[in-house]
Amino acid sequence: MRLLPGIPAVVLLLSSLAFAAPAVADDQRDFLSAYAGVNFEERAFEFLREMSPTFQDSYIYALAGTWSWARTRRARWELEGQIVRHSGLQQHWEINLVPAVRWMHTPWDHVLDTRFAIGWGLSWASQEPPIEPRQEEEVGEGDSARLLSYTLLEVEFMPPSSADWSGFVRLHHRSGVGGAFGGVRGGSNFLGAGIRRYF
Image 1: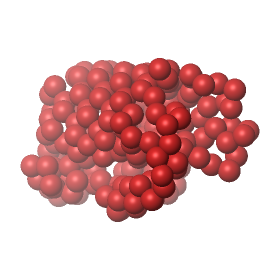
Image 2: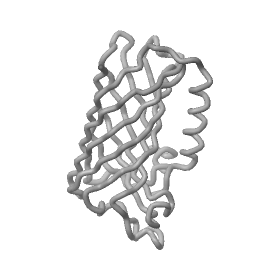
Image 3: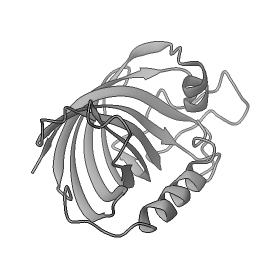
C-alpha cells in the first residue's frame, strides 16, 4: 500500500498557506476524539478516485488526544496521539503519532462549519498486521512490518451553534511508502467515523 501520491507536497503547500496569514487566538483548543472504522481492500488512491470500497471483516476502534500547538487565520497546527484496537481479521493494538494541519474555514461555515485535516506520521503495531501484505497483487508485496508510515485524511463537521462537539469522517492509512520502511510495499486502509470533544 503506497503512500497517497503527493501527500508530502500537499502538506508543504498547506504549511506555506497557513503561515502566510497572521496568527489569531480563537479556537486554538485541544480535543479528544473517538472513532470506529472498517477496512477496505482497495488502495487509498483507488478509493479516493472511485469511491466504491470493497469492505472486509476487519475493524478498528480508536481513541485520540490532540494538542493544538499553533493557529493562524486559515489553519490550525496539531499533534495527535492515537491508541487503536483491531478486531475481526486482525487482533492487535496500534499506536500512532501524527503531526497534522487543519484547514479551518469554508464559504459555507455559516450553514455547517466544515474543516479539512491532513496528517503524516508514524504507526506502530503490537504485531505484524496479517492483512497488510498483498502477495496476490504484486511481486514483492508479501510482507509487512510493525513500524510503518501513517497518514490521515479527515473532514470534520460542526453546527455553527456548537462550540464543543463535532463529528468527522476519516481515512486511516498505514503504508510502507513504496518500500521506504524496511522494504514494505503493503499497507492497510480503514474508513472511519467518530465524534470529538473540544476543551
